[in-house]
Length: 343
Image (cartoon, rainbow, N blue to C red; front, side, top):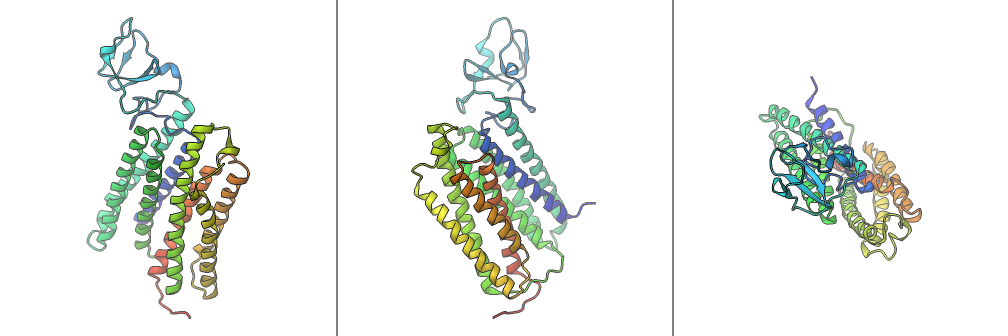
């Protein structure tokens, strides 16, 4: 039987896969691939060809099924079989937005994103039920596990509002930040049920530096989403092929975001120096530096090489991974098994 901690790790991996899928959705512009929610064009399994969304005579349609008619979405009011001519009384206009375009690639990319979200939600629900066994000895494990479930539900609702708003940038940003909150909850659960003997030495300055580094990363993520919002507006205005112009005359957030990367590198260097000098045992610092180097490289590539394919998605995913590793290092620094002071 799978252990509770392994189930928590599986849930964490699935949440990260959802983040990866979300990054791919945004990179490919597939956010409106499914214009309704939670179904996709009224189907549990979306169509693969435009002909499946066309009105046809003498065809049976289920209630809630969607068609595209005269560049608008129409939803079947009830189970119905069409006659020779279109009957408007059997259909109602989709009123949440007026986006009515079918692209099979975009549809299936968005559908896979939603499918991964559903699988991750199921995993966290199983985790919550499994956490009931901790109620008597560690109530916070149970409480946090159910908070994750509610967080996933809220995240699903945010996903719906993103679709209904036709990809409003602010709501996409909020969607991303909520994903990081869920990651933090799962990491904390994994941490407090960990029974492994860690050779970590307590050092207050190290803890404070680690908290500062984590805080700067979170600020950097927020700034990065604002820069991405600006790029989204540029894409709408200049077109998807004018990559060399997307960062022309950028906002002040871009310059702050770029400059802050230097500060993040320096504070993590200071953190690594103290960890290695006093042999504190925080081996995750090596992963932090590896991810940080990749993150800076992808940022440079986007600016100087005009957004090579995949760089935006990779940049976002690396930021989420960096946040997770830094958060766990902070947890290690709060409650080490050994409490030896260093000077």
